[in-house]
Length: 323
Ligand SMILES: [Zn+2]
Ligand SMILES: [Zn+2]
Image 1 (cartoon, rainbow, N blue to C red):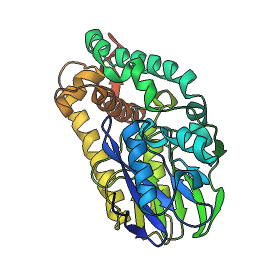
Image 2: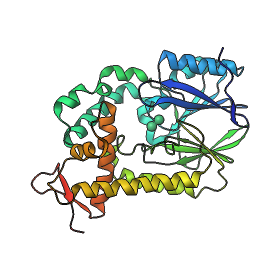
Image 3: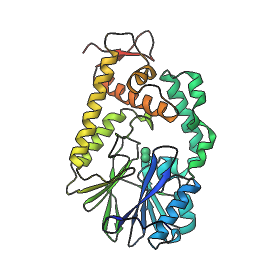
Image 4: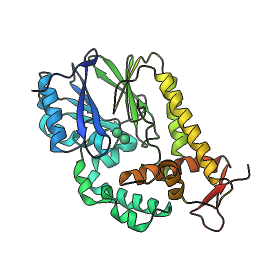
């Protein structure tokens, strides 16, 4: 039997759910009391479901007792199991309204989303044979989540818990509907704030434009919150120094923009993919999308600031501007 998950704060348990596809492991938080609440749900695989069930059992709960599941965003590894948990428990599920459509109509929208990814990858100069080989664009990935009936959340909304109120803070950037949830001195940050690496920007919802400045605006929003003592992220260990973590992420983005400008200064105009190869080395599978999306998010900001231009001879290539 699994040993009971330790409390990360009074009445809050962290259940670690395996996720072999994306980032190794997801944190799912159990908020004890009434209503019995989960923050996020893990990816839809038998192994993840078993881990979540045994984690709940070790604390003396059954999945059937769950009353509420609050999702931080629409990525498969965060909402994938919500439907299975809802089926056995009848739990209410919530997600921010901007991520609501893909989670409630996952099967119908998944094909459109992967088509959009293909179009962006082609526009970014990724070779056709590489796009053809990417496993995450294949149909079997659509099994990693299931549509779930959910209620849409909006910024500033409050959900009542035994521990106090859970306040919805809309933090677009990683996805358009990413949200953090504040409960007194705790902040559940999903993938908006992570301890060990900078959250990916640009590989989801790229059509919405200027994701990097949306993300940096959302970081500022979190920085201004009063009284947060502990951040509980979607992956990795809790973050106690929120200001230092925010500053480190901002510094990382400034440095990355500087590197991209350096790459584009002096030489021939380059595609998003060529820039990504110089920044990250050879890219494999979904890292092709993550790497190119990240470059694209930076390029959009640099173009807006006049520091980068599209080559007149080829709109898929970029060069340093004259500013
Ligand atoms: Zn995510
Ligand atoms: Zn994640």
